[in-house]
Image 1: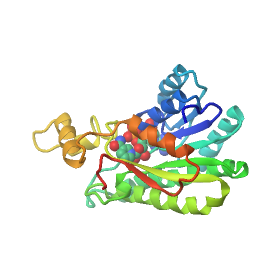
Image 2: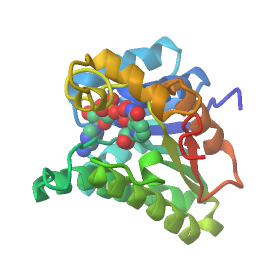
Image 3: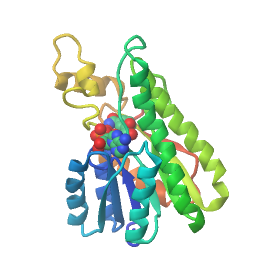
Image 4: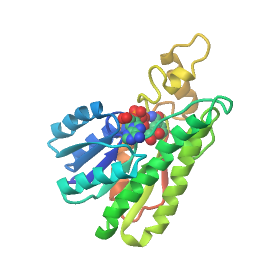
Amino acid sequence: MSNLKGQVVFVTGAGGGIGKTIAIEFAKKGASVAIADIKEELLSGTIKAIEDQGANALGLVADVTNLDSIRSALKRVVDTFGKLDVAVNNAGVVGIGSIEEIEPEEWDRVLTVNSKGVYVCTKAELEIMKPLSSGAIVNMASIAGKTGMAHLSHYVASKFAVIGFTNSIAKEVATTGITVNAICPGIVGTGMWRGEGGVSDRWKLEGETEEQSWERNKTTLIPQGVDQTPEDIAEIIIFISQAKHITGQAIAVDGGMTM
Ligand SMILES: NC(=O)c1ccc[n+]([C@@H]2O[C@H](COP(=O)([O-])OP(=O)(O)OC[C@H]3O[C@@H](n4cnc5c(N)ncnc54)[C@H](O)[C@@H]3O)[C@@H](O)[C@H]2O)c1
């Protein structure tokens, strides 16, 4: 697995956070990497980081909730690199609130990006992979796709949907040479958790700073007591994308949170 030269990888939500690291780690192995993000201003940083590894890069502005947008992004990938081997459907948003606080618009926002987004991307990716009779799709779920969590009900619902969808499509395409899996990160210190508006900011106790909340949450929630890094997540994604006989799985990288 040390050399992925010749492989073409597509990563959504790769302008920052875990997606950026996934793109860089694939690039380190020699793959050509196409990245998509809804925020155009984030693309150049990831493109440079991929090219710094000596790999080919392609940056695309795309919205995972829009089938036309993703189809045209994938057309650019195939026009540029000739094929598609691995698709990592990573883009996602978090939402926090009690049932009283979650209004229908907020429910729709979270489920549209996290659940519909994975369906839209998978549909478009299979249109390319099926005629080639090969490919690997890796969908980003979460430990929130395996266990209920208070004040995250819409986020949890969106990630349970990702795992159920992944299992179903894996069965649907099982004989085609294409694998479909989900990865379930635990707690990773990206913008989703850290800084203003992140989970540790929203979960501060009275008198606590965001930093103190982050330390308390990760040490009390994770049995191993340490957070997971974006590199931890990229490592399993690269492994599973190359494993021909692993399909329909939802693998947690969570320091034991869901054991
Ligand atoms: N950070 C964690 O602890 C954690 C834990 C479990 C699962 N996850 C999942 O990992 C994935 C990445 O999370 P992250 O922590 O890197 O978050 P992040 O907020 O740092 O990055 C998410 C990226 O997705 C992009 N994005 C959002 N909506 C989009 C859309 N409609 N189309 C295209 N791009 C869009 C954003 O612009 C951003 O660059 C998400 O699916 C998240 O739910 C994260």
